[in-house]
Image: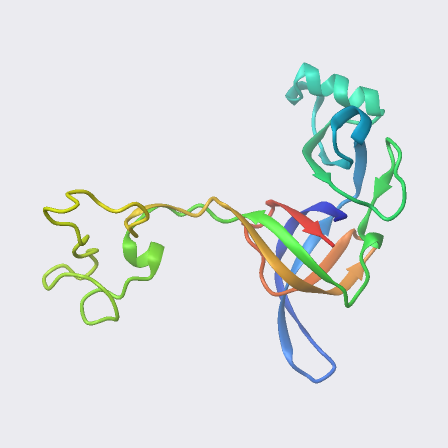
Length: 205
């Protein structure tokens, strides 16, 4: 599984050959540099670590400064490991959007927008009074009965209740690469991806 690290730029839309308007997301993908090469002999598995987005020296810890100095690259903000690449890579090699071709399909991993503490209607889509599910006659947005009585005298694990929403790792699969702009380090993929504008994403082939 090869891939690249990038940032979500925002959403737009494109027209295909049939005239259909397709919602799509613009991703600033790379350029990334190889900061470490994992081997089976030394680490027990093979992988390539990529670094993305330059960081200031003063904001980089001493161990990471040594890590980047060993690779001969500037400090980076984001580090991600990828299992396989078609060709062999060396420390300091650069990987950019030329890794992708228009028409192929990719998976995108990101962190969804954090919504804070939310009730059951926003978090789980409960219908409330007059809707499809749950609720109480005099409180429209309440969760209703939890279903437990004298037995088992507790709330079952996994019960859908209010709580912190969003801010989770989410993978969206099988998004088609519609456009590749090598000069601007941009790719355009169909559909939406998790996260806010400017957030880091991982694009897997």
